[in-house]
Amino acid sequence: MKKVFISLSVLLLTLLLVIIVGAITIKKSIIHVQLPHGAILHVLPDLLNHQKDGAIIICPGGGYSYLQTWYEGYAWFPFFYIQGYTPAMLEYRMPNHDYKIPMTDGADAVLMMRRHAKEWCFDAHHVGIMGSSAGGHLASTMMEMDHDVVRPDFGILFYPLISMKKELTHIDSHDQLLGKDASQQLEEHFSNELHVSEKTPPAFIAVASDDGCVSPQNSVLFNEAMHAKNRRAELHIYPSGGHGFVCHRRSEYRGEVLEKLADWLSRMKLQKI
Image (cartoon, rainbow, N blue to C red):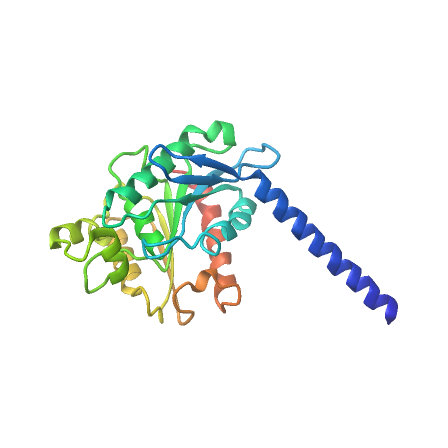
């Protein structure tokens, strides 16, 4: 019994050491790229210079007033890396009522990833974007850009803020992005459920029905708008978990979301746009 206990302890210590060494290796391998207007893009190229299927730009949330860079940013690097994608986290600037700032950073990030695709070993025509909460608003805005070169090829939206209409929005995010006195016209311009087009790329969306921060109706309306335009969208609504449930490691439905997302990404590879 004692030998078994010692063997188990050695195994756990070895596993812990591997995790620590792996984390240090990943951290040292991340490239920090200054974008033209001041944002920073944190990129993890393939450690062995093997060709990846594509890349994913991660936009953390934080109500357009700060960034949740760990749970909604760096923590996703291993998952996307294993799925065959080059992960990059966009440390976008806060708008402080100037909506052009995060949108400019988003465009800069997509352009940077496409330009360096050969150097960083991934397909330049398979660059996606992921956004959580307010980061989901930035991601869905990028998905509706007119110009092909700055519009991502697919989107992943977790409990996203989509609308700036006062009856749907997260009011603090609204005020940080547009200002408290934003006109109805400006609010509608940044209500992304209203601007889905034939060019909007495929989307994977996950939300908890008991989200008390950002109304799940944001996701429902965006999904409906996607299907109305015959765009590919996959919406998963879970009965509980609240806001941020996908990023909480103890969340009841996190594993299911990751499994479905992995399957969706595999299908995206087969249906490259």
